[in-house]
Length: 164
Image (cartoon, rainbow, N blue to C red):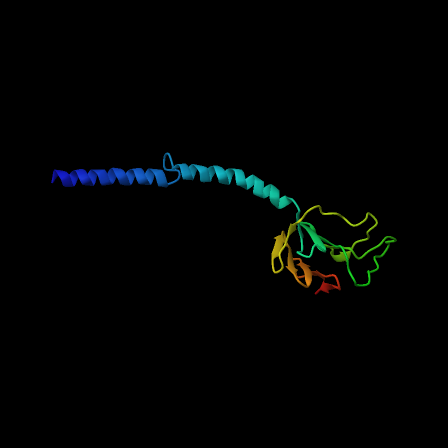
């Protein structure tokens, strides 16, 4: 009988120790819980700051690069075979830079030249990137970018299309 009570007492103590180590906020918490709490505290501000920064990417061909932010999308195409569009009030070239924002889709006047996005991350064919209300998809037929309402564009070496 004494052996039975001793085993029961040891099991109860073991159970209390396990609970004290594994339950967060119950006095002490385990090393993993403390590390997880520290990690979430340090990740949250970083994630919030990252959400405010533009995201840049290039299609695998390297011919199209885009920069996305919560205010819109700007894509640059290196070479194209379509006829360059006319941009009202623009005496410089056009056709390399398109923009999608709250005002809709438009080609940009290239009076400041074609922007260089640096070294963007590759967005594999079939992959999608979303920032704010804007989504861009990479495909072998170019890049397709839309806003939350479905307004946007498809841009490729041979053609560009306004959506919808």
